[in-house]
Every structure is written in C-alpha cells, then in structure tokens.
Length: 203
Image 1: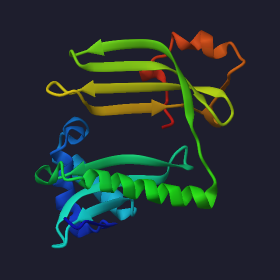
Image 2: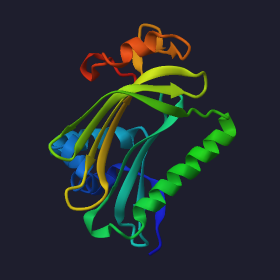
Image 3: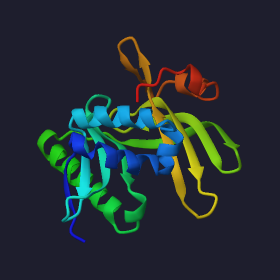
C-alpha cells in the first residue's frame, strides 16, 4: 500500500476524529466526541497534525506533534492514531518515522537537544490491577539539575503491551521551570513528599 503523509486540512477532521475516538487514548482522554473535535480543530488550525493517506486520498490515520511543545523549545509528540480497519499495516510506524525525520531535520538546523537520565522514585502505586503510578525526580542531562516527574502507565488486560502512558514533567514557578541542583540536598528532602495534585506541571 502506497502511503503519503501530508498536512491535515479541515476536510480531514471527521476521519481524524474517527481514528482518535476508536483508540484507547481517545477513550481515556477524549470520552466526549465534542472534546475530540475541538482538540483536533485546534491542531489542524495550527498546522500541527499530519495525515497518512492512500492512493485514493483516503485518510487512514494521523500524527499530531508540536515542534516547540516541550519547554517551548523542543519537539513533543502528542497523539498518533490509526483507523481501526487500517491497523497492523505499518501506518503508525510510517507516521512515527515521519515525525523522527522532521525532528532530525530540525535538530540539524538548531542543534538543540534535551535528554533525561535517572529517575529517583519517591512513590510508586498500583491501581485497578494493571495501572501503575510513579512520582519522583529525574535528572536533566544538560545541566545535571533535577525536576519532578510523574508517570502513569496502563498495561493491557489481554496482551503483553502498554495501552497508554501519561507523563508530566517539571514544576512551573514564577520565573519558569524550577530546577534543583544535583549537589543540593533539597531534592532528597522533597522526593518523598511529592504530590502530583499540588504541583503546577510545566509539561
């Protein structure tokens, strides 16, 4: 199957909505159809959504990414969704490859890269049998400072795979991201008192 990836237009909204609402991510984060439509409208209007189409110009799925979505400087992959009848055909992989190629090109131009390393777990809990929540501190490799991180993972009931993951990173202060130097003992004191609901997450 020949697949082209092009920027989404308003005429693709219905197909993108179908792909999103049929996905596990859509079920969790966009339970109401209007919420999905409003979000997709925003992404299309900002030029952040790209669709995969076949040689009959049929929209098979989409990818939504924001080139300056993380810390207002770095690429952020928001959503990938493929229509149910076109799954397991490699369409999702092609959309991801398109994202990687776009980001790689951007990095070659800007030379901006950010990486995380080492998660210090403050608390880990399990709920509903197959959902895991982790909150702790992680290291920013660029300057070896620490910021809070929250990860929630849902494992499939029927197969050995992750259905969805939610990640929150860094606390927002009056002057931007609050970073704690690695050499400071402050992060060790805060590690076990972190509360996801009391943190104003930056990302």
